[in-house]
Image: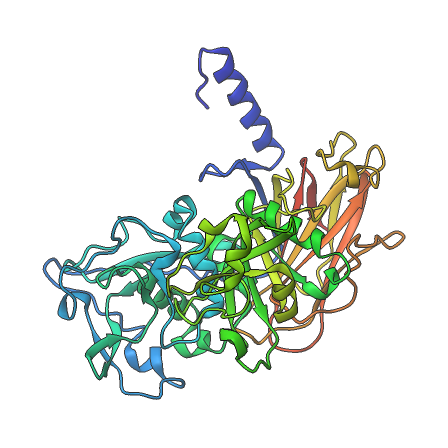
Length: 488
C-alpha cells in the first residue's frame, strides 16, 4: 500500500488497512459501506455472463435469448422484432437525461419493476450503475450492457437491441416498456429486456412480483413492506415515516388489494410509485396530509378528492401549485383515501432503518454470508462495538453496551417465484427475540429481522421449509461496527 506524505492521507491509509485486516473492505462504488464476505457453499454458482464477441462491422444477435424464448407463454398478439434504427429516427439511449416520467409500462406486466425504476430515474447516481452512456451506441454492434443485482452479486447482462413491436391502428408501436417523454429514447425498454433475460423471459416477469424484489435487483439494498392496517389508529405516524423516508432518499412504492372494482381510476393488483408528501391548509384552518403517487402506465389516474380535477384544490389558502393538470399518471390523494384504498407500501433504502422512523441508520458494516440451508454460522460481537445515535423515542429502549444488528435473509431462486418459506433464529443460548416481532416462516424472496445484541458469540440459524428447490441462502448482517462470522 502506498502512503501519502500528508497526515490526513496517512490516517486514511492506516484506517483502510485496519478495515482490511478485520476482513472488511471499502465499497469501490463510494457508498461509504464496508463489506466482508464468507462463503460456506460446497459449490459456487456464478450467474455472470461474459461479454459477447462481435466481428467488426457486424451486429450481434443474442442466440441465448431469441424472440421465441423471450415472448413464449404470455403474448396474445403477433409481435415483430426490430433493431431501433429500423423503426425509429435518431434512436438514443438517453434524451436530456432521465426522469420518472420516462418510465411507461405497456404490454408486459412489469409494474412491480417499473414502479421502482421510475423512482430511480430521478436518482442518476444509482441509475448509472445499471445503465449509462457507455452501455449502448445505436447502429454499432447491437449490444446493450446492463447490470442487475442477483443473489449477492452484480451481474453483467448483455442483450441485443432487438425490441418487440406490434401493428396497431396507427402503425408499428413498441410492445415493451418505453419512454413516456421521447419516442426515440431506449433505456427503459433495454432495462426491462435485461430483467426478462435474467429471469428467462418477459412472460416470467409479467406474472407479477413484489417491489421489494425489484429494488433488490436494481440496487442490492434493503427493503421493508409496511402494512397500512398497522397504522389505522395512528395515521400521522405513517405520514411522518413516509415523509422522512423520501427526504432521506429512500425509494417508496405501494400496492392495493387484489380485488378492486377500478372505481375512481385506480387499478387493482398493480404497483404505484409513492414519490412525495405534502401538508396543505384549507381556508377554515384544517390541515390535510397529501400523498403523491405515480402509475407506471403514465395514465389512468385517481379521480377522487385531490385528483387533478378535484374541487378540493379551491379550498386552499396555499398549496394549489402542487396540482399539475396533466394526464401523466401522477396524482395526489389524501392520506385517509390512500389508507382506505391501498393495503401496503414498500420502503427501500441502501442501508436499514433500524428504528422504523423512516431514516436509514448508520449501520454501514455489511457482512455477507453465503450458505446452504441447514448450515449454522457463528457470529461474534466484540466488546468495543459502538451503537449509532437514534431518536430520543428509541434511545431509551437500548441499554449501554448493546449493538443494533439487522439481518437480511435472501433465498436463492433457480426458478423465479418458486420460493420456500424462510425464517431466521439464534441458537446456543436463550432465544434472541426480533424486536419487530417477526416470527415463523414467511413465503418471500427476502426478509428483514432486527436484534439488539450484547457482545459475545451467537449461532445464527437461517431455516426454510421443504417447498421449492432452493438450496442456497444469503444472509447479510448490517451493524454500526465490525462483527465477525465463521462456520459453526
